[in-house]
Length: 304
Image (cartoon, rainbow, N blue to C red):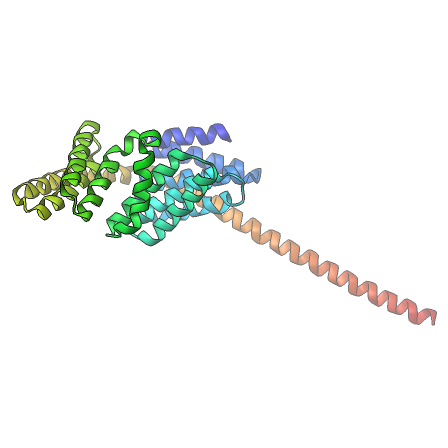
């Protein structure tokens, strides 16, 4: 099972959704047959991540939550951490349901604190700060930013450097420290250009334009907003291509989706069958006891 799960993850990271779902389906079947809650949860998490990658966010949430239900039956705080974080990401940054998403992030944070995973703590607190800043709740996000600033150099990840600097720029803009804010934004833009991470770079140009507007530098504010629009147009066109590819991929994935749904139905039928069996056994015992009482009563009457 472990090898099948790892293979599914490998395919997922390469955006080979068809192969990833095929492997995840197999691992789910094996895990279900062996009643292994850990690998059932891990399989559902990967299935959810596939739908996340395919922009089918409602289905992603459904399978993430299935995975979380089984993860909660295990002793693996790491697995609970990952699934809660995945749910937080979808709710905050895709569904824009920030309150729900932040609650999942905070649950994820509790598990990373239990396992003393400092890297994951920094990552999750960065997500929480970003979510709060997105909805203008800077005071709520500040404690998380303070923690990130204290530990980022030791436990931070290169993939979040742009966001790390952007968040500091956003907070100092809110606090009125314009020069400090600008320095962070320019660093974020420089790092974003080097990394080629379009989404984070676009967000930084948008947030920087707000600072420039606040400073009265309307020309540069317009220029940065224009850059933001250009990058988002590129992202949108890339997404259109991706969605076109996904539409084709989804036709190929239908068989695997149906198979996963079939496993779900079978599990429900098995649960119902088990429940009915228990009811029948209980009724049989009850009838048997009644008969014993009747026989005992007849025996006593006969003896008398």
